[in-house]
Length: 478
Image 1 (cartoon, helix red, strand yellow):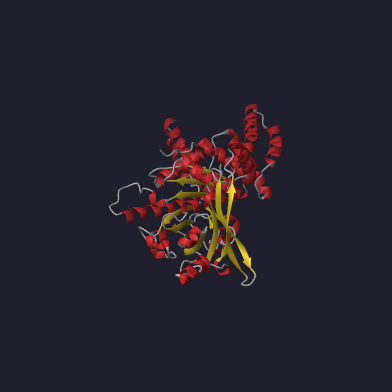
Image 2: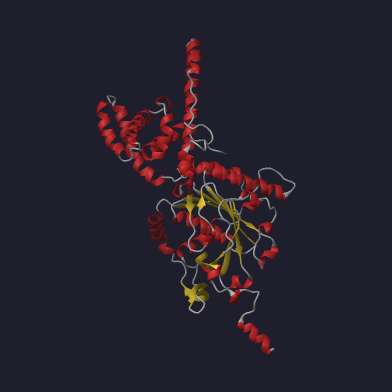
């Protein structure tokens, strides 16, 4: 069941953003009318913020405490002073714990709140006029009713709305996930509203890449919801925690690889590694968690396993997290979208998948977040590089994503902890034909430990189109 935030909670969030965020002030102050706020503290503080912004063109931030001390002397009602004091003393810790990056979504919610409150005020005026048997009051309220609208109305005037254009072209506003090394040269930064999918055949490590992307997003200060559709909590923790720790669950021999420069060719060779590593020390987990909280600061991941998920179910999860925890995601990772349900019966499975993927794309735009998933490709892509036309089930999936990334590997590359990432499709920007050669260590759940562009790597010995020297010697002897 979808939860609707009560107005007092929305009002509290509104005032917190009005105190702390410059952009929120700029967009919402022109719409504010004190009578839209139901609580005394909201009406009082909103007027302070409007006055402060008009003078300094920024949100008051920490100055709100100084404003309170200067203003309280003129407030005669002690109860009002007490309410203001309690509110201001509570928001410091609350804001530091629940600070969000997704201000666009906050602004949308704030405008919706003001619209609803303006209608409630109008409704109350009409009811009062009926109760008092004075129709002129109700008619006057209707005649003077002014719709709550942002200054630039609906849509964007490309020749006038300079702020919207600047925001759209400003990297800091849009980019929320940046991949490291050569992977970052193949996959451009993930932005709000993007829908990215990894494509590969079965057992190619797609789930590892989804978790890696979620962890990367968290490390870069984003709030992430990770939704596995095939694994329960225990299974996903056993996969995720080793990747965070860099250790296997139990003591074992760990296989990986590293790049080494070849002086003659001035290219990188891939050298295989093997070492014995201790398993995870369960007694150190709480200490590690504290350290990671300081390291990641605002970044968080919520793992929420779901069975037979639909887009509506995921929306409800987001609403619940926002309502109970002030947790508004910047990124949602779904493992995998192909396993989701469409909410109604389809005779053709391809139509179901198309509906699901279109819904995910719409959700990304609606909430101003990035959606990440993965999908299978046809069986013969086990031994060949993946092409756009080889997405399994329904090629229309490609039409809904903004980025489609291929996970390529031959059998020998897979055995040698190597995978090659290539761009299948990109909605915006230049299509890159090169690939990133990525070294993996899946024994500890890490699909990317280092990467180089393919043109800079010697791949002859691990490409199964050619036999290696030992096999050639063996065949000659035979």
